[in-house]
Image 1: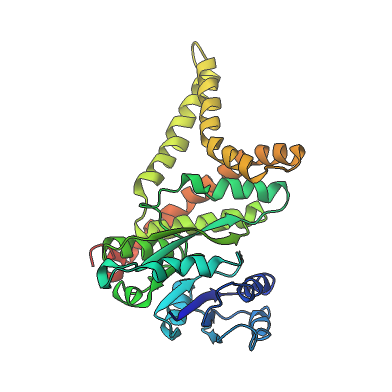
Image 2: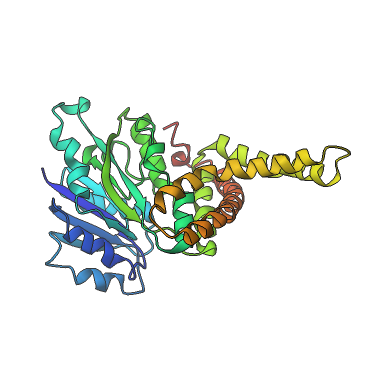
Length: 337
């Protein structure tokens, strides 16, 4: 079975070696690697060219100005293998990543439409220091939280039949963020295809290293949600919590006529509930680590939660406004197509 690994990159000179070195260490080598660069100006392409002759079938495409979807689609279109495995710059792949990711295809005995057409891998945080430890615990799910039947995989660890990619129309090029979620939903809703689950096909992902870059990342994610009309209920709950519930509890705690402690209790309980899941993940991530790092990370979790929620509340209406202005475009109504 011929397998093509594809990725899209942009100004990843500092991180691209980690990805390429991890591809060299794969127990099952890809038959080719196709990488589309979106017009990097930091030496990313020069670094990639150093791997020519070392990484099997490496091809580097240059598409200045291409967004993530356009870059992925160009790389996939150029791929010659019937099976495509996608990943991202900024990750480090487990040595058995590709072997485990394509195993369901190789083991599948079902013909045609009844066979495996897409496989979801998984990702783990690649962290160092209290801040990244807290960030990893806050933004990335633990594997025990995953329900395979409803899981929407990230394209940093995903494989699919190229024909399936063609039938769903590829990645949505009108979206700059949240594009892999729309691609997943198209596979599930338009093709009625389920993702086979390969939890040991691990891509190690390095979270953001500053609150500023994290805010920008989550603003863009939420803006993408608004553009694609995703997760209305989740965003509505967030607005109701921050704009109605928290002010009401705070107002009662400060100016209530009686039992002000109930307001403080509600705020405290809400904070605990909001941070409980990241704190549980933190216990897994920090296992065997220093207690001081664990305490520092635990204290950072509420801050990261607040920054992320604020970014989402700002980004989502920006996406809705874009969607309203572009409602005449057929691709924006992707669920109706």
